[in-house]
Image (cartoon, rainbow, N blue to C red; front, side, top):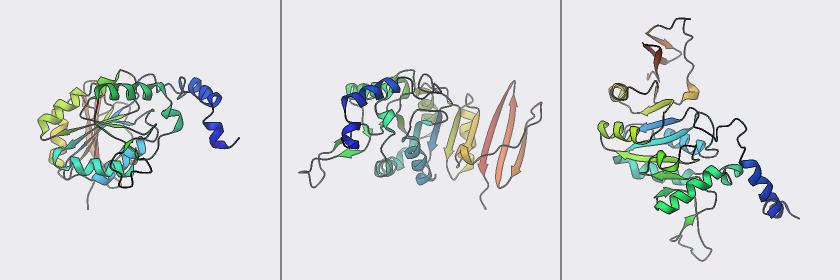
Length: 252
């Protein structure tokens, strides 16, 4: 029996189905762990944001992953086109995961528009009648995460805004307690304006991903302050018993 035949056998799929109910072993399939939201303005780096989305969609259940994306209306079509062109197949265990399959059922029931990997019949040489590939990563357009249940959904939601007021409304509509907010804009004033409007968010990055940031060590009793370390600007704002952090690269 070939490897493909083994992987498609009923026994293999049955064993895989039993395993995925307990996967990942760290329990991140049971509840959201440090979900992130990205907010992309027209002046932001589209390619960087698309790269993060595509990367997180390979294994969209875990800790610190992007759950939602808000995109300025004028670049919506360009962003969708680039995501679609760069999507890669998901991890096989996620393709069979009950969280993902539950989301797929809801997407089909509500007829949600999506970005996904398409496949075509051999006779469709002009690729006019594509359909979603089974097990494809899915980005749902214009629907919030809370529509798909209270567990990690294995999908990303993408909505469009025209102004800052709409950003605030869409942020709240997602229904998630986001651990961090990643804003992409060449206008720092625009980024800081959002910080004041979304007071419930505590960790902020501008024009960079969390993985590139190494916050300076804080004293035992944290204090508000600003520092610059290795071309990164850091701010700490102590508000009651919480600390609001802001980090962004310094442009030369």
